[in-house]
Image (cartoon, rainbow, N blue to C red; front, side, top):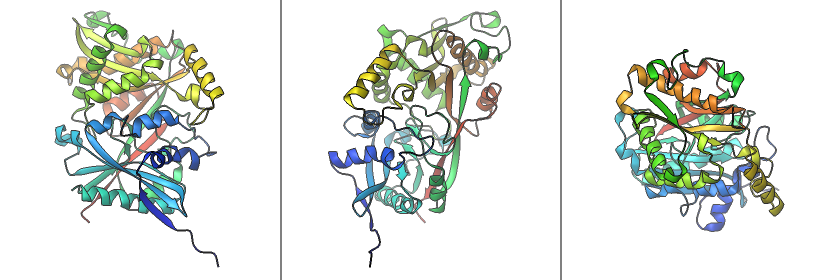
Length: 390
């Protein structure tokens, strides 16, 4: 008589187990429509405590689900000290813990994984579990509900349709959806009239505003401007966790090889930063067909594509507005001005589309601005919550 397969949830410890944890999604999702594996190197930068900036202000425990010794699922549980710096408007408090990196080969694996994360968080004194995000809301955000067959995008998590249903069946409830929009760029798209004529940087009432791109000689300074404006803009927004200085420095170091000066948009008034955005090229454009661990020949192809900047899409990862003008007429115009500038730069950059992501479903002003150009989101990710005192 055949014995039933035995499922064990095991804490991750050591280099080999961490490597299994990093590689697991590309093993269990291989061949699924719409899935493209990220580079293992990129994921290790995100997850490895020795390399990830998250661990300068948080801690985490990873778990693997093993069926008869074979890895079939994973999850992280983490706490973030930075939530002590957030306002009540974020919906976060110091008794909130998080889960992330949730992936499973089949639905029945999900409940024990969530229980393992919940038990670890209870032991840390947390009474509420929220997620998934890896490892906080400045990393990979939410569980994919819609958009599985949309083109893959850097730093955007991918999950099969059935995973969301499994999470809800396991007792998690919806906390928030975040939306992504696929915006075409270039001269034709510019005719969409994102902002009224006469309201462009350096024209009419906006004649005292100027716009510039990245200054590589002052990249640390520009990175700090980006971090401060982003934190000021979103600090009272649901789910917000401030971008730490260590995280910004780590991100700049990681993306520097693919970063072009034009991908940084800074609107200034008399030298004072008013609005800022950072766009990063979509690594899947040049690495999506090479697998998570390219061969030496694959790495050579990747290097050649990188040198030629063979990207055709990109993603806005950070956007911020000076808090002094938030709530004013100028403050309401600045996001549109930044997006218009990005579209203008589509004339010279090779990108045909830019993804605007992680827009809260409740953020009606931003949605109205974007949906003037792109009526429907291309992807929807969901954040779930669970009371740990029940």
